[in-house]
Length: 246
Image (cartoon, rainbow, N blue to C red; front, side):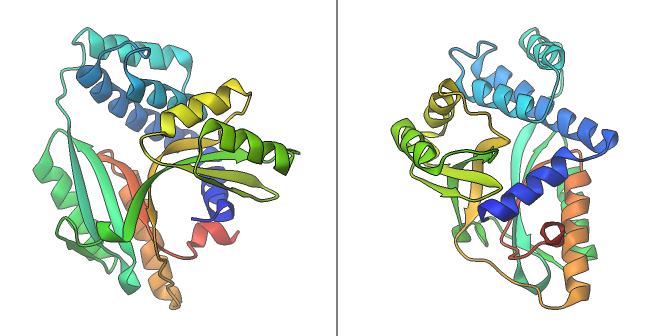
């Protein structure tokens, strides 16, 4: 997405009501729990955990919650066994959609995801049917509150980023997935604070939905997927989501 549309999505999420924020906290907590079980509870030696702690703080998860999640997972207090499952499909007008899940019941999750695609005019496909349209990239967003473009450019390049997009509202920085953590930490040491920072599936092309009814259906598909406890992330190539037209 462009810096503008990405920033609009971030603002929408940050303005979410208490119930929506609680759901975000739960999803990040599940991701952190899996990460601790796989790589250990020490952020110094578990780079992915460092990234997730940073992500939790960007989403205003209290430090006490973060510490409690890590201790519970490290001590075996979290008995749930989650597995990563990725679903791919097409929404209305052929919009490509990738749905990343963490689930303790693959059959339940598959049924729910398929139901949402069917209900809102989409089609759930096979693994690989749309992923070729996306590239994994580290994406870091900084709110532009009087930043100097030349200084940001120098800092971003010094940190090792691949590219950046400077707008009046926000700065969008992109990196390779392998260098994401290094770039994030380098920029944090320079004093930058991120509105969002994670490895994302970035589309190579975008699909418009000219029909208003189909636009509403696509929006409802995304809303229902986001509301599912099992769904961690949704990536799509919808050119102008309704949420970005405010």
